[in-house]
Image 1: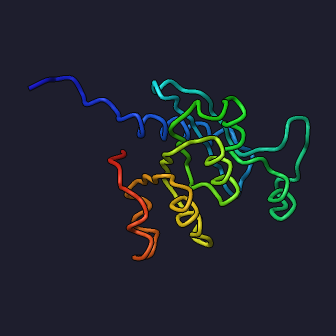
Image 2: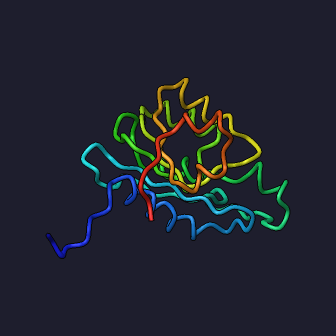
Length: 157
């Protein structure tokens, strides 16, 4: 028996990096982070939800900021080229628009730790685009029975 602690899986590693990246967000309503892994498991990009560069947002007005904020997935993807990465880890399941962008970049796996309870349609969009979803046990307690078969659980602490 080894005294060496078990190493994190690549999915858990990327998700932890995404969660740390989310801490940079100025959004007090929802902090989201994303991490991209290349095919050799090196980190290609990190991003968090925030204002476009050089733009000041009124973070207290949720409706004002919601239509202006750049999503974490988009901020992470700007460091990559289509086909360069196989996995996107995100603190929350990507929205439909981000899921389309992820598909356009050829990313086939998405791992996430939380969902938007108001809109579960990203599960269906991912399936339609051939993107395999992986979620933590945190998600399993938040989704309905019909959505539980749309992702695979990962071990994440």
